[in-house]
Structure formats: C-alpha cells, structure tokens
Image (cartoon, rainbow, N blue to C red; front, side):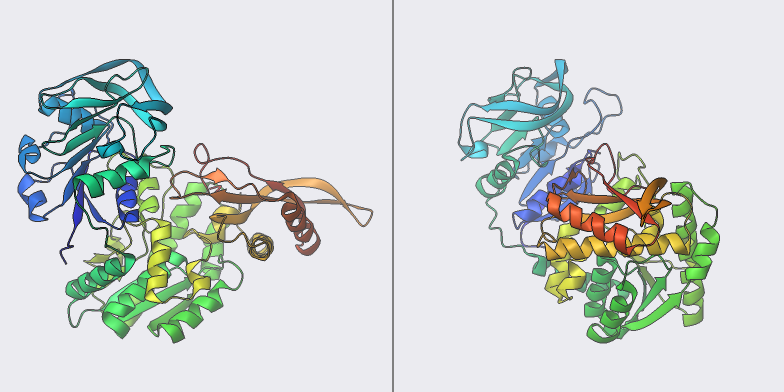
Length: 514
C-alpha cells in the first residue's frame, strides 16, 4: 500500500543507514531504505516527499564508487545528503572533494553560521558525530556554507532554491546532540511533512501486504522462538490470515524461567493459532555436549532448529510460506547489510533455508528496531508482560553459558536470571534498563559457606541502556539493588558462589557475551 508521505533513503553502505530510517519514523514520517543503484524512475514511482542520501565507506573519487543519476537533483524533491551523500552531491553538482588534512572521527564541535532553515531552533555550536577522511573543499554553484569545524570548513551546505541540504556529520546517531531536531527540520521545513504516520499505520500496511502475499488460501509456518520478535510476527500474521498460520514452538530447554508456559497460553487462547509445541531439549543438549566455541554453538542450534522445523513441516503436510522474527540488528550483526562485518551469526538470518523446502519467506520486522517491534506488539494487543519481556537471543541460554552447555548449567543461569529480573521489576527499573540478564561465566572460585570451603561458579550481571541496540552503555544500577541481587543469587542458586557486574559498553563489547 502506497504511503501518503514517504521519505526514500538511498543506501550507500553506511553503517548508520537504518538509524536514519529509524529517526525519520520517530518523527512519524514513513521511510523506506532502497539501494543506491535503484533506477531513478523506480525511485520517483514511489512518489517520495523527500530523499536522504546516506553515508558510506567509499571515497567519491574511487573508480567503483557508488554514483546516482544527477537528474535526481532536478526532480524537484528535497534532498538531504549525509557524509558520503554530501560529498557525492558536491562532486556531481560541480563542487570539489578533497582528502582532509586531519581526519575527524567521534564527537566534534560544529559551529552553525545560522539558526534558521536546516538549523532552525538549534544552538550556534553543537557536538556532532563525525566519521570521515574526505570532505567538501568547495561548494557547488548555488550552494552556501552554513556550518564548519576547526578542521572542516564545509561541515554543512545548502541550496535553498532547489531544497538541497547536506551535512558532513551524522545527525542520525545519538552522539549528535541535536540530530533529531535537524532531521525534523528537513522533514517539516524542507519536505513539508505532516507527521501523521504511526505504528498503527505500519500494522495496517503489513497486514495488507501479508494478505496479498499469502493469498486467500495460502498457509504460513512460523518459527516461534518465544521471544518478543517472533511473538509480534505471530500476532501480525494471525491478524492477516487467522488460523491459516501454524506456529511451531521449539522448546530447546534453553528458555528463561516460566516462558515456555506463557508462550503456549498466549498462542492457544489470546491468539488461537494452530500451535505445535516441539519438545526437543534432549536433542539440543545432546548435540551441544562438549562444545565450547560460541560460533559452533550457534551453528549447531541453528542447524537443529532447521531440522526440527523440517520434521514438523513434513508432518503437517504442504505449507506455502515460512515466517520468522528477524529484526534489523540481527541482519547487521550477521553481515547481511551492504557493508557490515560479521559480528556473530543468527540462526534466523541469511535468507530462506533451502533445507526446509519452502520457496517463500515472510519477515515483516526485518527493517524494524526493537523498540519499534514493542510498539507494534502493543498496537496489535499482545499482553504487556510479553511485549516488554527482555530481549532474548534465538540460541537462548546457550550463549549465556560460557563453555559447555549442560542441563545443570542451564538451570543455574535460568534461576539467577529470574532473580535478577524480579529485583529489577521490584525496583521499578524494568522500563529504564533496556536489557538485563545473567551469564554463567564458567569461572570457578573459592568461597566459604557455613564454615566450609566451596569451589563454585561466578555469575556475571549484564544490564545496558540503549536506544537502538546498535550501541549501548552499561546501566548504573543502585548499589543496594546490586547487593540484593548478589545476596539472593548466592543464597538461592546452587553452585553459584560469586557475583560480578559487567561494566563494558557496546562497542567494544557486544551486549551478549557470546
């Protein structure tokens, strides 16, 4: 369904491209990311109200650097160029781009020459996030400089007649103090957006697209992991096609305390889909025996998931489509983005597994971030306790157990995690800390209990705050809370004798330990 107002984002391979889409949607304007080499006719057919050119890793002077049709600038559509998008705009329209004498990476103070237009309502100087080696050294004809830094004389430029504006810094990242205001200025002052797009609109569009894709008689098999993402997908597809959706829930013995029963209740009563629970714990623990390498764990779990689904699908007879709850951070970390390095594999990313025998894949959340998925879940009417459940990786507790995975170790981390979650909720911090869980570190240390020497495991607490899960900071939990959690874990969880806290940001660490 064509949206009334659409912002098209041309992706040049920048690591922050999807954050641009996220920021636009936060302003209640629909956005869509398309590859940089999409033909101009196809871009215009989408009737965009504005176009944003993303950053990218290339130099505009490279022989194989991405290029766009210069006619885009003559289409009468407002354009915002960011980083590479700014440099490409300058080069194509007659300006100059040169290697900077001093590269700029990280927070840099940008001085705005005016506080109108693109910088309307902003400060005269603001901390912005830079990430560049090349920069514009001369504006194209018709453009003027509107911002600078100590090392970048053209930090922003504008051609108001053609409604083309460009910035060298990244307004989409949270490190840029007034980035959202800049994006709002582009959307509402340059593009004339009304800002009436909501998650309800997204839900309506997704439901209609699912119906059109599946058809009147089509059927769907959903890989229901029990987490927020796959649960929201289940509700969304149920709204579209009802009981023609079959959910296969694989209980691999690595879920958190009480989750298996909750998932079964929700999708047997509130959203009464065709629900199949496959108890495969023995198989997963058996295949993970003796395995300690994180990626090998993930591949084994991914393989077993596929084989279990294949077995269940065969027993069900022919189903037309396969669905899963992939979200964008999964795609990025699995190296599925244009320029993304593989950080860790996700069993539900990388395209449709041919082993399943399906020819069609449905991933309605693939372009959404976690907070957007939660908002969608609430819109669809899922229980708040499920929607606001802590993010949980597909491999489950297996990657929160350092070293070999056993049923006994799973029980230790399951019980310690339940205590941590209970105390966070009791302290009223469950909506303020974005993710929190425990890790069985695999480290054993000497302790004393009841005048006896012990030699048991160390539990790590991990709690982070984040807007998008692409970057994260460790949560500054109250000392009294940490003390209660530590005391309860050591007293209530067998074989846990020590508790430590992870105070590492992302990057350099990932949120999960494996």
